[in-house]
Length: 267
Image (cartoon, rainbow, N blue to C red; front, side):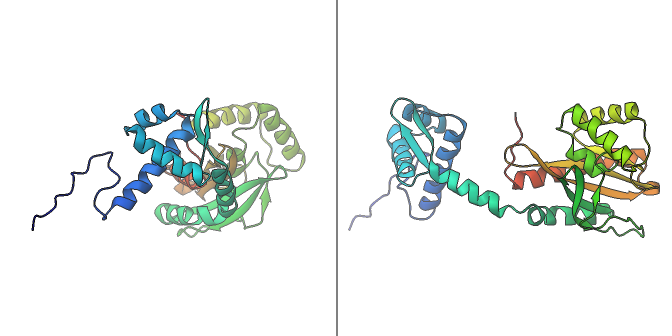
């Protein structure tokens, strides 16, 4: 009885050994979707982009067309299908900001030992959605559900980073009239321009005496700022040098939350 010898699997083989074959096909199918997400591609372009034979690329793409993940346009090629629109909508509904952010801000609070806030823009105010107290014996008066001025809080400034400067001025005037701590507009405006360039914002004891914070924006799949996080502590623990040291960590956590919401940084 002669033993049969299975053909050696190549990078383009989808009919190899049973173990792992299904996973390989799945990964190739996802590669096809991701390639088409960037450009509408003809069959030849798709095969070249993924280093597949045309027959394999056609088999994968046809299966995805059948399930609605791709659409084939005779004169231009393959593009994303309606099924992905449906799934994207469902994913957006499930991506509750508090639930998505919670594990990230828990780790941030544990690592810094300082108070971490999560907030959103609500009727021209910063609405605090979540708060994790730090380990230090510091009383920070903020509470979940509080709404604070945008121009004097780190969260508020981070939420405004993409807004036009005319909006900054309107909020500054309104907040000052409503009793926000008196500030010099020219100096405040200059700091905001610096915050935009740095991708984060500071609260330098502007909202609460002896309390400083670092804040960074959270973005959704469209790149829009939908929230912000901040790390707050007493000024004695928040020297200028420590704020600079913590900046990368706070921005990194905000970016990780944004990633979980579907955001992808532009090249």
